[in-house]
Image (cartoon, rainbow, N blue to C red; front, side):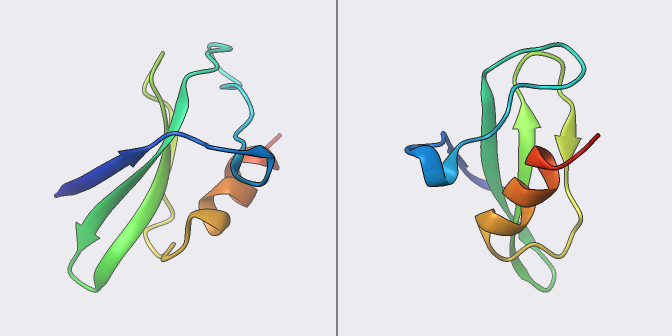
Length: 69
């Protein structure tokens, strides 16, 4: 269940544009998991996302999104 959508607010929180569609509207999403709250990154342009299923902090998914090839 989706809890909140969070736009990056500063340089430390910044997300790179989507590698698939180039959209710059990329956000964090927090949701409830059976094991607690989790985070994922979601592209508002093409719905690409990174959701490892274990990220309890935004920084984890930010690193995965920003370091992908």
